[in-house]
Length: 366
Image (cartoon, rainbow, N blue to C red):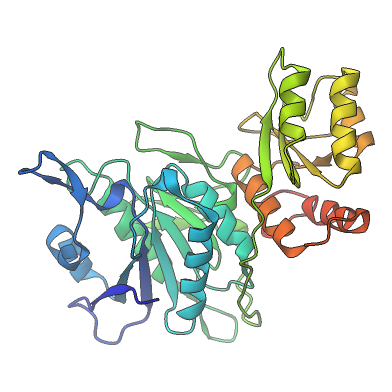
């Protein structure tokens, strides 16, 4: 597929230390106000330096790639994740890092999905966006974009004296904080501090300088090779429990035709009703090969199945504990793992349950 690209060679570059591919998917970031139409319209990235003259002061190469169809993040789908993974794979050897401009509503889902799809990733993939469009005077787009670029281009020197990236994983940068992508969640729709990572420390904080929380950043592993996993299975759903949930509601969700996975949003530390009809319905689904993944509704903390009687029975019927995983990471992890296993038999279900319970990309604590 042919993508429209724009190359920017900042004036301060003499011997560029890095090259960053920026992928623009859509979202609030790239909107400007059209006075004639009296509405926000997509920004023409060919004039990016008019809006962001700060780019001229950076000391690395930047290439901007725009998807053929700009996507509002509410319309984000697995097909777009596959396209992003393929773009990164195609350009992996040409660029030292990647920045994805993305709408905020589903940014954590995309970051989580890519963290599982980009197996062997050893370069930065930083997602960012904005709460206010770039064409608005008080927009947060400029700071988010410039700092995301600087983080993507940041390099270290290893013990042998070789250059390596400071960050070599999928992250979300927003409002001065760098978060592990599959640990992030959107918590705010009207303030600039849109994203949080309640169960994992920030990877960096950007103030007068960018301070990296190095012990918590995934270690650079030079011997890894990128493999992308593009087989995703969307035959999954989320079942959020609430007091008074009825048997009819649970059965209508659990018995969806061809359903393969359920993210079960439980109370507190993984607790759920102990009504026999509820447990029997889940057990019947598990016995026919449906994966049930227990994730807490709480923003912080973790699932501890068996700590209370109300979760012990979930453990006994084969529900998989999600520990401290987010819902966004849980649902995308299910899609990726199910895409890797086409067999729907009991043996495959056991294999998948084992993989689901273990961290595969830093998305949950052991």
